[in-house]
Image (cartoon, rainbow, N blue to C red; front, side, top):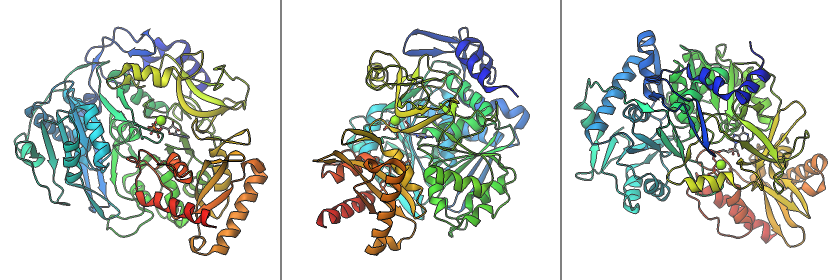
Amino acid sequence: MTNYVDFYRRSIEEPNEFWAEQARLIDWQTPPTQVLDDSRPPFVRWFAGGRTNLCHNAIDRHLATRGDQTALIAVSTETCSERIYTFAQLHAEVQRMAAALLAIGVGKGDRVLIYMPMIAEAVITMLACARIGAIHCVVFGGFASGSLASRIEDATPKVIVSADAGSRGGKVLAYKPLLDEAIRLAAHKPGAVLLFDRGLAPMALVEGRDHLASVVLERHAGADVPCEWLDATDVSYTIYTSGTTGKPKGVQRDTGGYAVALAASMKHIFDGRPGETYFCTSDIGWVVGHCYIVYGPLIAGMASIVYEGLPTQGLDGQPNGAIWWELVEKYKVTVMFSAPTAVRVLKKQDPALLRKHDLSTLRALFLAGEPLDEPTASWISEGLGVPIIDNYWQTESGWPIITIANGVEKKASKFGSPGVPMYGFKVMIVHETTGEELTAPGEKGVVVIDGPTPPGFMQTVWGDDARYVSTYWQTVPGRSVYSTFDWGIRDADGYYYILGRTDDVINVAGHRLGTREIEESISGHAGVAEVAVVGVADGLKGQVAMAFAVPRNSAVLTEADQALVLEGEIMKRVADELGALARPARVRFVGVLPKTRSGKLLRRAIQAVCEGRDPGDLTTLDDPATLQQIRSVVGSASAN
Ligand code: ATP
Ligand code: MG
């Protein structure tokens, strides 16, 4: 096994040689003539002159050696169904869908907007787009009409592919009315809409525009659609960021660089091997789903599980907090990928469920998307008995920026740290106002990336190069570096710690405090399941911290004396650990916290409610009732 320090150094010092080697992990129809072209920074062109195709690398390439091996396992605990596709079957399905798209006039470079639940057809549609060189724009299924409309306008799709409905915890969400309303609102109209009918909700078809996918697909059974060879730098897809901090941006990705980045990450980071099963619990609406439900595992010749449903419901539709572990046993999952938010849901259950099934095939659980607090990490790590690997990245980066390259060297993880910079990423900590690089261990600053950005990184903001440059590359004074907009520190061993978003800092009586640190301290209290801390304007101190906690014992929500005791303990804990300044002014208890659809805390909305302001754009808010809860506890606070 290689030493990671050398591996990393080579990626930075000899990027051409390093990435030329990684490029051999995929198939090229024409090999690249140039590896790195950074003649127009901050824009980077990887593997110019090369021609390849993502779908070819995900499917066709494996047909000769593993055509009969499982490629896709579509499991829904909502419709109580399981369906398995071998690589050969997936090949046939994808060609049929590709033929259908071609027949309705979709060509290379055209956008296809996908608004679908977590079903195999969604993955098949993405791969079909890749096959014919169409650009897919997946929008999280069930997003409200307004947010869908703005994405339709930005992407101007020729065709939209959707379904009658999604389902979550047994509650059917009809997509078609949302889609119809979104198309009505949007200035751009798609030429055609293809609809998969799952039989969950009625659909009224618009004459001339809407087509039932089953009818169209039947005409193309047995179709033979060759892969369209694309330039490495051709666009493969666009995807919008989660919208935690504001208006989502259309992140644009290339083809060749992305394929190489994913193939390399499957090997060097996830250590996933051909023939094994990968289980990523994310959604195709997020970047993690694009990379590690669809393309990454398939490119690596692994089977991938596509999962629709809650982590707490079984295949018989009954409550089952061990369903994910049941799937690990059943499909011999070796690598699993989830999010801290999902683990926190499981944490409310009996830990014995984690040991109910045979997990002997599982080698590691990767978690990403938000800070992984120590109590959550310890709970799941002890419960499962496998290494938990935190990985830090963004929609923009396309693959992990900071983690442990498990396939290169199984370096030890440190609690609270996602790890070290991944090969190709020149990560630095800089001073927020001077832009000066902070090299001393423990110095807190903004996490930035120096160019050239590695393969797989976003090419630009869709249709807006100027926005890409001004949003990401011109915010650090005196330097042209990419800002992640996250705070971080690096320790003496080179491990990084992410301390929260740059807009999640509060200023109490002239002292700057990260809300993440306060949250970490509070979540260490055994009585707290989850917590959000925001800074609220205060006439005296500038800002004060306000905490909203989900208690483990729900009696705290109704019994005022219990709430008071817990609040007092929490305040003491924070004061002891971080100092009196960090102590929240109040701790309020709620049943759930407001989150985005991808499970991230919407602190800006909580803060706005606390300050009596309009919470602004709430299209990414998962459940409006959660913000209502905040409103009511804030309201009762001021009444006291
Ligand atoms: P928007 O940019 O639209 O506000 P977003 O930043 O939530 O939305 P994503 O790209 O999905 O959209 O999320 C990336 C962000 O998530 C990171 O910048 C970081 O703040 C957070 N994050 C992701 N993984 C981790 C991790 N392992 N530890 C800490 N924070 C993480
Ligand atoms: Mg972001």
